[in-house]
Length: 361
Image (tube, rainbow, N blue to C red; front, side, top):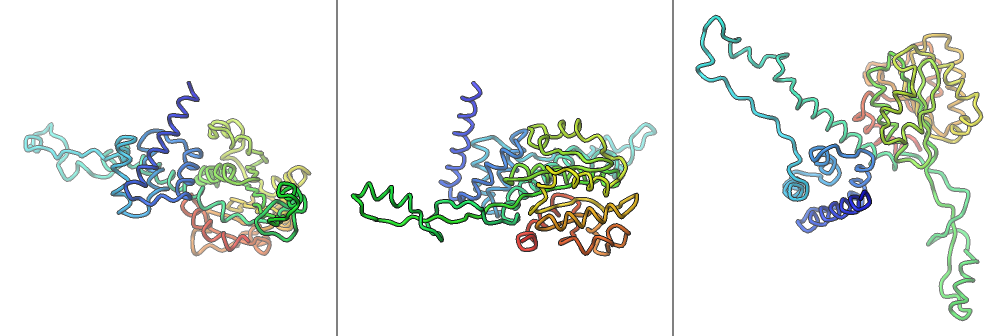
């Protein structure tokens, strides 16, 4: 029954994309790929959630929306949630009796539940989902690549594929009709993400973990660790469908103290973990506020910079244009960091991914 339902769902989505093209909306293969990938990374909760995922990945202008909305309504129903109107008080409600409510100018003041309704929270969730879909789209081209050691068949290459040429010649009576080649294809470098979940990062660690979830789902080779007072390997938890529950059971030091240096040294002391950093794009998400001795912190960061291809440091404090790495720890490692950027949510992460296509090579 589940397979039958999945088959119907796939046919329904194909029909929806086909009608969009028939109605004149340009939906090229890359956009379709982004839409389908976003559905797997962020499964829609309801038609409204599905509407904004499809709208963010398949449209690009107001004209596109005018074509998109009626087609979506035919296939999935009305997806765009509307804000319920608030009726103005009638004349009979504006009396001056002792038991009457507050005057009209105080009915909609801030904090009475009207301006901060459920729609604002729902809108914020939709914006976060749209930003996550952008992360999924921008991440693959931003990750640096490396030549593979093994050669693969290719249309053009630097070495003749003698075996394939010989095999095809047998089919043509010994005549070599076409030359075949092999070359070293390019593949993504490994990505290592280290996320600070200490108390000073409480406001930002959730956004960083959502970004790490997209990294694990998108990149070929990705590993994620969290650290506060200890190091935790969370990659298997991020592969689970309900990653939030898995992380809650796994990460025990969230919102606690900060021991960046000892946590990074614990990572470097493990040979299996050490291989993950060698030649990788190393992304550290932390404010760099080391509470203890800065010597272990400095040594660990310097070694990470030597092991990895690039060491990128994302700090929410750097979002302030006036920020300078003047604390003892950050001042000591500033020369070892390739890119120091301010990231405090998924939107600013998308901005850094756009810059990363050139800065992380």
